[in-house]
Image (tube, rainbow, N blue to C red; front, top):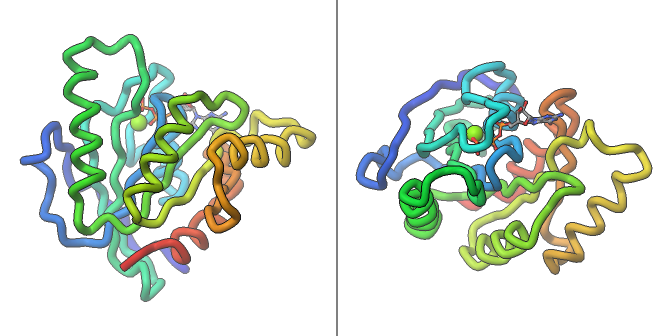
Length: 200
Ligand SMILES: Nc1nc2c(ncn2[C@@H]2O[C@H](COP(=O)(O)OP(=O)(O)OP(=O)(O)O)[C@@H](O)[C@H]2O)c(=O)[nH]1
Ligand SMILES: [Mg+2]
């Protein structure tokens, strides 16, 4: 599969601003700083399409990207970078706005074909487990990505995968991909899973 183009479409701070619900869509969900924006850049072979930051809470809006690929099943797609959850330092008002916006997006977006749920390998938390269970209840395709795989020792890789599968009560049908946005490990595997899981 070849990437033909990738472009930023718009940034929305409320559901009324979301672009039309037309293209098959993939959403990236996970805690602040887990690596959502970095993963989007890595998947798209771009360095700065989605804004990355060391400071958690960088992505404060819902950002939409449009991607064309040579794969007939994934020829025209929308990718959505959601703000991270669980970052304590943002103001209460902001958190009160984000939570419902993310929930509303995930529950109401008709064209949502798959959710990529990011969890940082080794440092996952109870909130991640709850999010996995909630996303599963939405009924769209779900792929778990364990991020920052470059920080794991070889001996930690298999146990990290197994620990997340057990903690989240995931059956073998839910794919978990180890990914590093630094080395791009997992990129082909993740595109393969997107192709398989995508509900059109
Ligand atoms: N070592 C390593 N660092 C990573 C990786 N992916 C992301 N990071 C770093 O983690 C930090 C956060 O990355 P972002 O991509 O901005 O995370 P995010 O989930 O979009 O964060 P918010 O927008 O705040 O929700 C940055 O300092 C990245 O460089 C990875 O695969 N390996
Ligand atoms: Mg981000």
